[in-house]
Image (cartoon, rainbow, N blue to C red; front, top):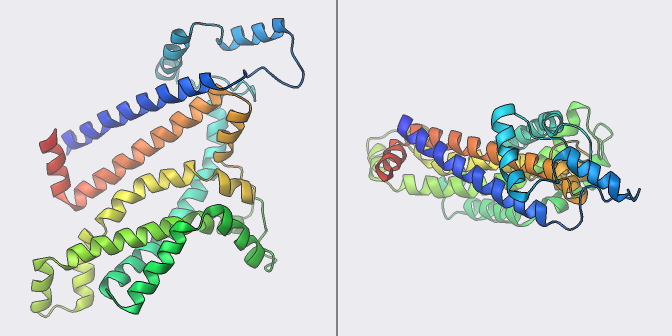
Length: 310
C-alpha cells in the first residue's frame, strides 16, 4: 500500500508542476498588465509597482522564485488587484466553497447511487430506461439553465428560500441542488455500469443458486464491487464541484472561490490566478489520491496492478 501511495504522490507532484508551468506562461501571455487601470498611472508609478511585486525581474527568475517561496515560506504572494495575501483570499472563500461542494456531493450521492443500483437490478425494464433517460438529460442540461429554473419555480414561490444570497442555512439548498444534479446523473450511469458488470459474475449467480435473498445478494456481494467506478469518480468530482462552481456562485451570489478565477483574469492578477489554480490542482490531486486509496481498499486488484506497473 505504501508503494501504491508513493507512486500516486509522485504522479501528483508532476501534475502540479505541469499545471504551474502552463498557468504561469498563460498568465504572462495575457494582454496588458496588472497596473493598467482607469486611473492611468504614470510610467514611474507602474515601474514602482512592478519592482514592488517583483515583476521587473527576468522571466526565468519569476518562474523559479514563485514555487521557491511556496516551499520555503508558504507564501502565495500578494494579489496585485486586491493588495492582500493570496493565501488569505483563498482561506476566506474556501470555507464557503467546501460547504457548497460537500452539500452538492451529498445530494449527488444520495440521488445517483441508489438510482444506478435500482436501474441495474431492473435492467431493460421501464424503470431502467426511464431513470437512464433522466440521467442523460441531467448530464446534458447545464447549470446555468437549472439554476434560473430553480429560482423561478421554487425560490420565487417559497418565501423561506431566497432567490440569491448567502448567510442562512437554507441558502445552501438551491445552489447545492444545481451543482449536484449533473454529478448525480454521472454517478447513476457509472453505478449502473459497475453493478451490471458485477451482477454478471459467477459468484453472484452462485449466491442466487444458494437461495440467498436478492436484497442480501445486492447489499453484501454486489454493491462493494459495483460502486467502484463511482468511488473512483467521487474524488475528482468533489474537487470539480468546488473549482467549477463559479457559474453557480454567480447565479446565486455565493461568495466562494470560483469568482476569483474570473476576477483574476479580468484584473490580469497573475498571482491570484496562479494561487487559485495551484490550490485547485492540489485539491484535485489529494482527492484523486483519496479515491485511489479507497478503491485499492475495496478492490485489492487495483492496488496490486498499480504496484506491478511500477
